[in-house]
Image (cartoon, rainbow, N blue to C red; front, side):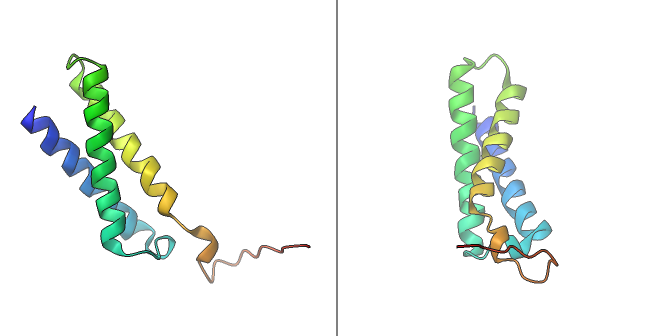
Length: 93
């Protein structure tokens, strides 16, 4: 149980730092907010899935932890504020 919790936290750290390294312009908020959101989402996703699966499939709980973390970190992404991408959105009234 303790090792799974550590694994969930490491998954969250990997997702958070991975998002900041691969797409830094998409996350204008504080870097700590992105990483903290990823870690908390991974812990919650892993804990809920571990409870729902009744500790029978720890690999699946790790997968759900990663997916939950990625989904919640993607909510923080702001691709509309990225400049210099060459794509322009025209807003019509």
